[in-house]
Every structure is written in C-alpha cells, then in structure tokens.
Image (cartoon, rainbow, N blue to C red; front, side, top):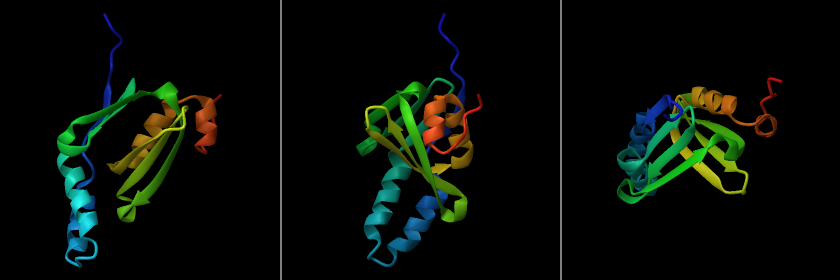
Length: 131
C-alpha cells in the first residue's frame, strides 16, 4: 500500500485573468495576450498535492510536468490582478524553471509548497526555515 496523497489545489488559472485579457483584447494591440489567456483557460490545469506539483498544459492539454518537492531550489511569486491571482516561478535544482501563470490563491499555494521544500530552498526563496 502506497503513501496517501492529499490534494491541496486542483484546477485551472484564475477566471479574472481571462476576463481582464478579453477586455484588453478590444484594443487590438493586446490581442496576443487575449489569445494566451483563452489558451490557458481552456487547457492549463494545476494539481498540487502533499507529494508533488503537476502542471498539465500545452496545445489541447497534451503536456504534463510532475515534480516532487525535493527537486525545488527556489520559489518566486508575483501578484497580478490587484493581488487576486499571481504568477509563480518554481526553479529546480538543475536550473530549469516551471511557470505557474494566473494561479488562484497563489499566496496559500506558495505557503503550502514552501512548507514542503528544503530549509535551504526556503532560505533562497526568502522565507526563514522553521528549524
């Protein structure tokens, strides 16, 4: 019998990102941003559990990335939409990065992930370790 995996968050990007970018699309200049937001709304899905972080995306949701918490070396967040949602960049120990765009409840998600990463990664991310 395997270790239980509890789901903390499962879903897509924040709906506010889509609404905001659709409104920007009326300016024509921001049309590429609108197309990006529609694509994210249709096919991007996040799943954050007690054991891993999974992102499904790409064209028609055909790409999936899974990573476990001990692979993370740093997390950075940027608030968007008046702080209602945010972008998160997770840097891995091998130097590669995973972007979580328009993450709902991004502060709670950041805290949840931060509790599960190493003390060294917490220090680099700007959060003191709880040792």
